[in-house]
Image 1 (spheres, one colour):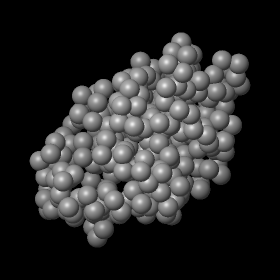
Image 2: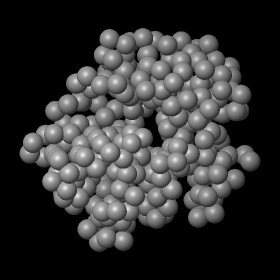
Image 3: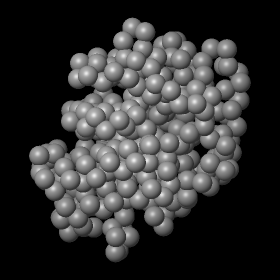
Length: 283
């Protein structure tokens, strides 16, 4: 296979990943990756167990920059962050761009703010219980209100913060398990269509994220194949990432995903090299 192999969504022990950055680099070299981007969760404005601490941000950046030089003859490395967009609870993306001199930035929504109470609904993680509890207690069980808030927050991030990459676009479906909504619901598909057109308008790269599949949390990509096909039809640039939290996850369901994407007619994926974006064919 001549496809360029790379992963641009990687979490180290600086946040909720499991190993030091160099362990990921060594594994990526072993796997013959052409590039590896580090994107640990950026600090937010409240205490948590998933993001880099504000005090450790400089160490993270210095560590990745050191590795970029150390391994420059073996693999192309990138310094990035996955930045949560939570109005009132997160830094502007420009703060990290200025402070860290990032190669790129992944924008994601993991916590959905209620538009009035500002309570936060956690829609990620390995357990379904927080998702269910948040929907019930914060949004009164109103799934339409919850999803409208999620996609409104995503759209606001796209237009106001302008991330280079949009992380796991429809991850809010993960703990739904087809109980409260599905893509055939007109009200839900309208939300998807609106956001996809905004992704196109803002020229944001949309990642295809394999983590839900290889962790056994969901049975399709984030986003799913119908959304990928619609994005491709709109001309949205697509990128394949594993959202690795351990070196062994760098290629998790990656090659299987390449084959699936090729079968459904996706012909190219997007990459970054020395801050220049380019596409390569899936072969």
